Image 1 (spheres, one colour):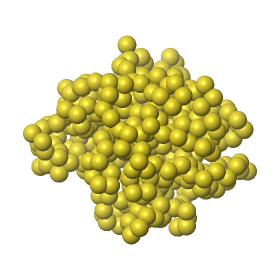
Image 2: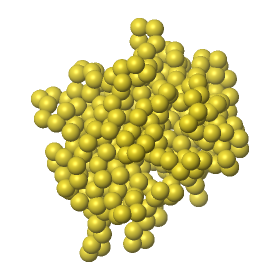
Image 3: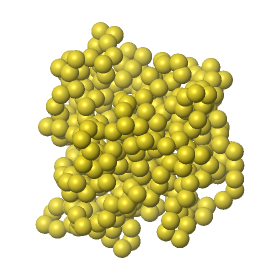
Image 4: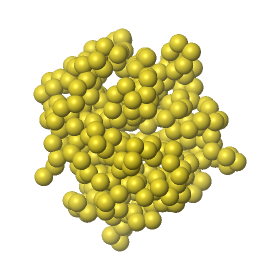
Length: 377
């Protein structure tokens, strides 16, 4: 694989950012959307993919995963209790298939976002983030990339993953290209990253890769990056980053790739409070495109912005994921309330304005470096 320089997301790009209908999602009310799991918050969805990238289908339903936690207390506390949930999707209907893994199976104290691919031997490679360490007295923010490969079982009209598969760390930040994500204290949005592994098979060489939300050094702080790892002979090794955001943003979450008309579209999510300075740009889905996996990447729409929340509802959705058919899924976050930052509000008020379920689906149109977003019919 050729060694390309990482693309750089710069302040010059953000100066080109404008609010247009083609990059703005329609207004929705997160708190009014039907909840898939009545007693649990749900966020960060991803399909179990086939090796060609399409969602896996069993008994007429797609298989999905998402993060979940009991819908209690302040919504921000969900990150301290997150578990990966298995879901079935039948058109617009969802079925809860329970926690994906047995209690205590993960090497972390929580399970954060990842990706999954169904293998020809009937197993599913689940790549996810182990946050903290199993058995720790209080939640820490140490992050490692883990793989488990359970057998997929479909019996009696119910789909499960067998509980006897090993969970093993396959990637760790190296401390050179990528800063270690090993903080014991912090809060979401204010910590270094080495998480959100996104599986990708490059059609150019047929090999497997992982994209990882990472951090690199910048001045006396850190900056967001999209790390790349490649699989050789069953082992994963880190490569130079595809993208860095020095001086722009310190958190490029849930990176993923979609190949469309021979273009490689690199997408990631970020929030308005993780820009330098905060609120320099909106919470949204951002992206770059290139003629090959390793670049050279250029920002979409000049600025990198692909989908933003509307100005009247700046936090209505988050964690967008673009599927191979260009549908876009996300979760419903906060409804605006009297100019308050609900992440910092008291628990009852934040809870009353939190979605914690699947947001209305969107659809992208991609034309080279230009994009536009519409609602799904």
